[in-house]
Structure formats: structure tokens, C-alpha cells
Length: 261
Image (cartoon, rainbow, N blue to C red; front, side, top):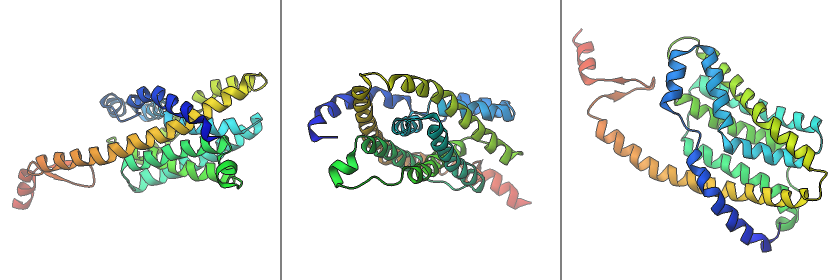
């Protein structure tokens, strides 16, 4: 990783810009699927969310670049899965929330971190070894899981089978993760023996660095700009009703009616 590679950095940043529009957010169509379906619908939406979750997948691709055999890939992906399952299930069940833009900004930094590490950034820039990768994958897994939890908590989960719905969504995430990684692992494992792999490795990991920085800036912009509009939205509708922790709107008329009785 050398400063002379900076022009590639700028070029890849420009190429990455169009992907920002593909954020894996919460859609009315997904809400309709969850409302009208059973537990299988949560598996489906979880898998779909992971398959479109390019920030999660970019980090995992960065991890796979570092590994040389299938056994290590399974080991590291398992550790990542344990990490994000812990926070996805527990944070959602306990109702622990955080601003999704801030969480996604940290996830973006995990992508940047992995590309930087793969390019030998710690040795080149700091003259030291990189932190233990297995430990970092677990820690970043916890953060990624919290990000997935913020998405799941954006849905109306309805009544009943609350824990089962969370676990089903998590199972879907795991299935989507496996489906996304199988072709990536297959291609990379076949490519590693070729002369062109080293050049591809450099370009791909520079891309991870650029993606991480670009996504971080995008999420921070969304945090400040989105927060301003969310405040305006709450102000505009503050006289229509009161928002409660259960996610439902209760009108003043309803409250008055309740007090009359």
C-alpha cells in the first residue's frame, strides 16, 4: 500500500459512486411480505436483505482475500456469524436501538479497515503488525449484527412469536450470506493460481478502501441531513398524535376518550 497508488483511489471512488443508490433499506414491499406471511417470510426478507447488503458482503470479501484455504474461510465466517447473530437477536429482542446511519458508518469503516489491512497498511504506515484477525472479525460481526438489528426494528413485527420472528430473520441472513459467498469463494479460489491475481488483489482491496471511505461519508451525510428532516417531520406531526415506544401512533382524541372512562 503506497501513496503512489492514490490516483487509483480517486478513479475507483468515482466508479463506486453509483452503488450508493442501492442501499439495502426498509421497503413497503418487504413490510407487506412480513405482515401477510408467517415465519418463512422473515427468512425470505432476511436473506434478501443480506444479498443486497453490499457493506456486509464487502467486509466478508475482504476477509476471504486474507485466507488461503476453505477450512479457514469456514472458521472466520463462522466467527463473524456468531458475532452478528448475538447482537441481531439480543438487540432486537431487548429493543436496543441506535441511529442506523451511525451504525452503518461504523460498518463502512470495517470495510475500509479490511482493505487497508489486506494492502499491508499497518506495516507500511505504522510499522506494526495488524491486530488479531479472528478477534477483529468477531468484533466487527457484533457491529454488523447491530446494524442488521436496526433494520429489523424498523419493521412492524406485529403481535406474537416475537423471538421466533427475530430468529427466522437471522436464519434468512445466514442463508443469504452463504448464497452470496459461494460464487465469490469459488471464483477467488480458482483465480489465486493465476498470474493476474496479484494485480486483481491490489485493485480489489483498493476498492474496499475507497468503498469504506465513500460509504462512511455517505452515511454521515445521511445522519446530519436525515436527522434534520426527521426533526421537521416530527414537528409537523406533533399535534396529530403521540409516538410511543411500541411504534404506534395514538391520537389525542383516543387519549381523551380513554381518560373520560
